[in-house]
Length: 474
Image (cartoon, rainbow, N blue to C red; front, side, top):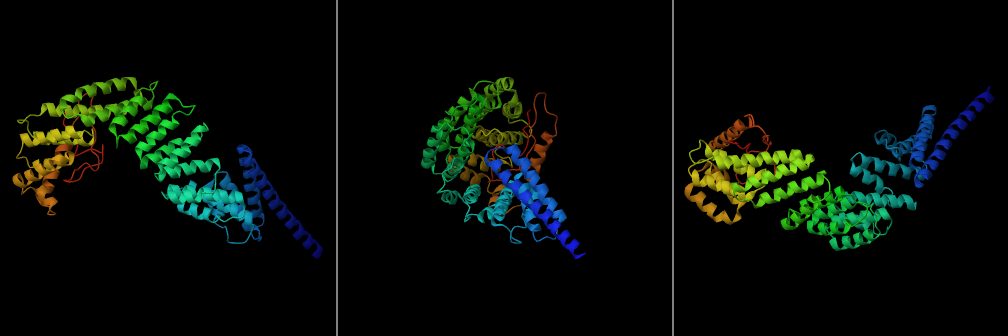
């Protein structure tokens, strides 16, 4: 009897040992397949590892080696991209002692999964466990991942310091991204030139340009000139690169931005990027428009773009309808027009916020002051105009102090809000809403008011966010 019990224990232990042995053997084979680039084989092997480890857990849940099986299963699931399932088993890292190499593999797997699921802090904490690893491969991976997360957190100099001793290809890309993010343009250019000379199109050039563009749009544009010479780019990808460069430059150098957009718009084909570039060129032109009479040629150009580039129809339709509404209002409203001051106010807001045409908006606002100087909204008009024309600040202050000292809008600026102010704003909002509710004329799609459309004195909405409401097209 005692012999049978002993035999059962020994056989059970052999089954357990064989299960773990096979799971670890398969894990080694899976890693080898990964190193050799055999992705499909590696995934299949990791699936077998997960199955073997789970079998050990089911058959021997109270074994002192159960924790090891659980962690190995978590590593396998993570390698297969099943991070939601993997983090449970991986959370048991360090609860019990098991092989150091498995513990480090588990930290790597946990870090990758945390990052994949958006928890960058937890991911970095996992990678930091391996910065002093004795295994060079795991230590290198941990440093790379730690540096990447430092860069994503905006800690560019720390990321560069972490990568200091590494020179492998992917580290060079990460170093380039960190140099660009730190605004160290000369060093970024030097490294970029060496990589461009290798004719390597696999680099994350788009990310590098975007990172540098946040710091210095002009420097980013210089980098675009370098990388656009790389082989293998299609006309559409070239146009997209130039379009995005033009949009960045528009913040700091409109002349250079216009040149870039013209290049992008001249690309072959009728793809999205060339069409968007032509629309953005018209937006730049709107910045220089100062008279309503200059709007019809832009509307004609939009129609031509819409016919050639079908993919821009949403942009051209919305922009064209807003331009048409502003033009119709400014040409149709005269001093005898009922509530003409409100109609022009909405047109000026649309020109300022939706069209981003500050000169045109300032001219419309001034027309309100000329035609309706006693309007209760005249002080608000003055405040809006001085934001658009900084040379008019002194004149605006004099007008407010002499003509409208008792205005509710000035009281608000002095920190003394009154019921009259709220009544004026409510009335203006209701007036705008009444036009938003009207059926649009044939061929015109109305823009709906944005949630933050109510414009307070002294506050300008974000570009293209909208103003008080929809312009009356009549």
